[in-house]
Amino acid sequence: MDNKRLTLVAMIFAVAMMFIDQTIVALAIPDLQRDLSLSATGAQWIINGYLLALSALFALGGKLADVLGHRRMVLVGVAGFALFSALCGATPTGSIGEAWMIFFRILQGASAALLFPAALAIVVSAYPLRERGKALAIFFAASGGLTAVGPLAGGYLTEWTWRAIFWINVPVAIVAIVLTLKARPAQATRKTPIDYRGAVLISIAMGLAVLGLQQAGVWGWDDARTWACIVAGLVLLAVFVLNQLRVRDPLIQMRIFSQRAFSADNVVLFLISAVFVPLFFFASVYAQVSLGYGSSEAGLFLLVFFAGFATASQWGGRILDERGAKPSVVLGCAVSAVGFFLWARQLPDMDFSNQWYWLAIAGAGMGLVLGPVSTDAVNRAPNTSYGEVTGITQTVRNFGASLGLAILGSVLVTQNVGRIEDTLTARGIPTARADAIAHSITSSSGGDSSPVGAAGRAIFEAIQLDVAKSTQVIVYAMAGIMVVAFVVARIGMPKGRVEEVIVADDEPEGAAATA
Image 1: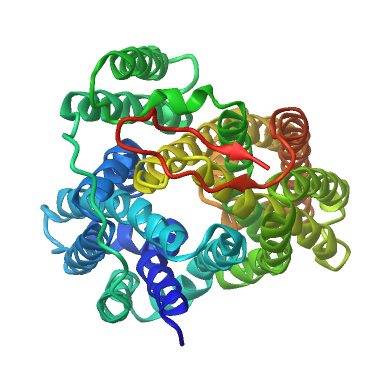
Image 2: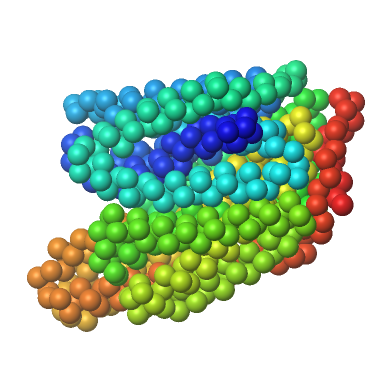
C-alpha cells in the first residue's frame, strides 16, 4: 500500500469513532436510563452535550489544525476521544453518574471537533488536485457508512453491556494512531496567531443557536428560552462576522465567502445536511413503529440508503476529477429529490419490499453530492488553510443538521400527536391519555406497543399508519429541500474544474481559479 492510501485508511479509522458515535449512543439510552437512573433531561443531554461541543468548536479545531499541524491535532483528537470514551464507559452507577456521563460526552464532542478538520485536511493534502475526488469519495462513503453501522453495532453490543459502545472506540483509536504514525502525513504549519476572541465568539454563538434548536422540541417553539437562545446565537454570529472583517489575523478569512462558488458550495452543504443527518432519526422511528422492526433491523433499513450512497459517491468522485463538481452535484440533488419523493409516496403502504429501491436512489443522489461539494469547497481555499476551511464547512454542515432536525422533528411531533390523538379519542380513549401515548410513541423512537396493547391490534395498526403518514410529510419536505439545493447548485456553482493556486504570504487568501 502506497503512502497516500495508507494515509487515507488511517484517517478513515481516525474519524470512524465519531461517526459511529453519532448513532450508537442514542440506541443505548434506555439501558443508560435504567442503570444510571438518569432523568429525562440527563438522557437528552448525553446526546445533546456531544453535538453541542462538536458544533461550537469546529471552527477553532480547523484553525488549530493549521497552526499546530494536522498530524499533531489528529493524534491529540484521537487520543482524547478514546480517553473520554473509556471514561464514559467507566461511568459510576451512583448519584454522580449522570453528571459524569454528560461531562465526558461533552469532552468527546470537543475532541471530535479537533479531530475531524485535521483528518480531512490531511486527506486533501495527501492527494493532488486531480485525484482528490476519488480519495474523498472513499473517505465520505466510509464515514457515512459508519454512521449506519452505529444502530447495528449498538444493538449487539448493548445486549452484552451498554458500556461496550464506548469501550469499542479504544481499539479503533489504537489502530488509527498506529496507522497515522506509520503513514507520517505532512506536518505543515502556519505561523499565524490564533484569534481567541473570535474563537470564543463563534463558540458561544454556535452553542447558543444549536442549544435553542435542540431544546425546541422540549421547551416548545413558543417558549421564550428557545427564541432567546436562537436569536442571541444569531446576533453573536453577526458580531463574529463583523469582528473577523476587522481583525488582522482572523479565525476565519471571511473574504473567502466573496467567491460565489465557495458560498454556493456551503449553501448546498447546509441544505443537504438538513436532510442527511435527520434521516437517521426519522427512518428509525418509521422502521420501528410503522414497520414493527427491532433496533437492529432498523439499522439494516438504513444500510439500504448507504448502499446507494457508497456506490454513487465513487461515481461522484470520478466526475469531480474529470469535469468538476457541478455536474455531479446538480445531478445528485435531482436524483435525491426524486428518490425521496417516490419513497414518500410508498410510506403509507408499510411494505419495505416496495420502498427499498427508492430509498437507495435517494442515497445515491446524496452520494453524488456530498463528496464533490465538500471537496470543491476545500479546493477553492488557499492550499495552506485546509484545516480552516474544513472547519468552516463542518460548522455549516452541523448547523444545517441541527436546524433540519429541530424543524422537521417539530413537524413530525405535531403531525404524530394530532393524528394519534384523533385515532385514540375516536375509539373512546380520554384526550389526556391519548396525548400522553402520542408523545410517548413519538419521542421514544418507537417500537413499544404496550401503551395501546389493551385496546387491541386494530388500534395499534391505526397508529402505525398515523406514524407512516406523518413521516410521509417529512420525507416530502426532504424532497423539497433537495429541490432547493438543486436550484442553488444549478445557478451558483460554476462549470469546470478548480485549478490549483499557490497563494503567497502577502497575497489575499481565498483565491481560486476555475478552468
